[in-house]
Image 1 (cartoon, rainbow, N blue to C red):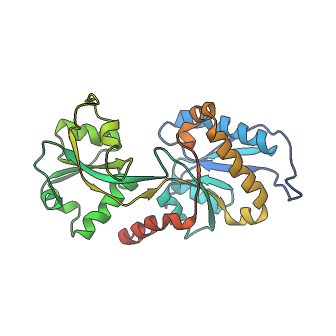
Image 2 (cartoon, helix red, strand yellow):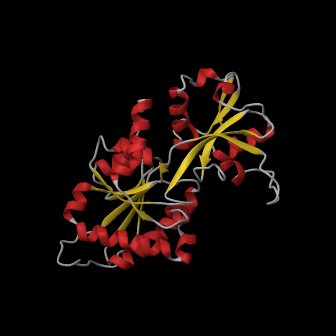
Length: 295
């Protein structure tokens, strides 16, 4: 994996603490990536670091990577103790470094989904109608906007060559825009629920419909549940400081339950409550990774 240079934000120290007679590290480092709005993440990372540092009374460093591969490399090299990863990146990182899953972020719920969507007026009804149509994917690294749909297509003996044209839009919003404008016939995007009632198509649609009017879209396929992004810790660090780690988890949950805090760190922590997570919850992602032979 290509490694990018990492930028580091140092947060002022408050001092040291002893947690129930457990040895205390000189500092802890939390790793994340800029995400959708790099400037907002940088600003919010300072706020998050200050909150954690105040609660634990231990110096906190925030390590901001340009991408997930750089973040995994930092964890592997012990420059980062805790990391906010994507589901796929966590599964891939397991091959290089021992990680323990602590929590997962939520938006509309503990899981989200991938969906293939067309306009309501389209003649496309089933997967056999996909042949020679134009489809937009978000990015070749997008879990819901490319990878899960690829598994579905492969299982039905289809691939990118099945379509007349494959477009990489760059974002879920851009895919929806291309569908509405008629540039493509199908899009692969995220869905919020297993019935496909809500997702990128209505969140980013330019045509906001009244509540009593039916959707202009139709969902042709919904994936299995995809676990939301995990917050992990290096297993070696956890074994040294288990009480500190559980204290950190508790504080993250408390921070996210505060309405003011949610708004101030939503780019990093999501908008819903943090939930405990386990490694087994990411088995579907492992299966997807194995099916596609992603490296």
